Length: 90
Image (tube, rainbow, N blue to C red; front, side, top):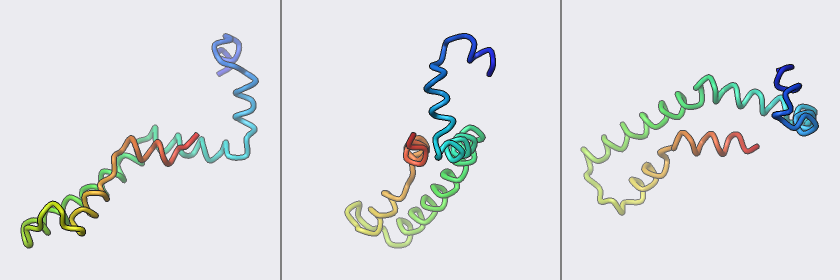
């Protein structure tokens, strides 16, 4: 980090503004969750549940694609990248 600061490749004053911002600890926590893949795994688990319920409904009731409940399940499917963009809005 010291070498990066000395290198001039980043705007040190901007980095200081970021680090002293009241929400900086939250940003770091969110970034750690993203980098460690925790968020992606949780999204995949949620999507697996939605997919299983959707498959069961399709098998048992065979609703049309315009069925409101089926549309809600389809809309409940979460895109991993979109989730992280909305959760980490910085």
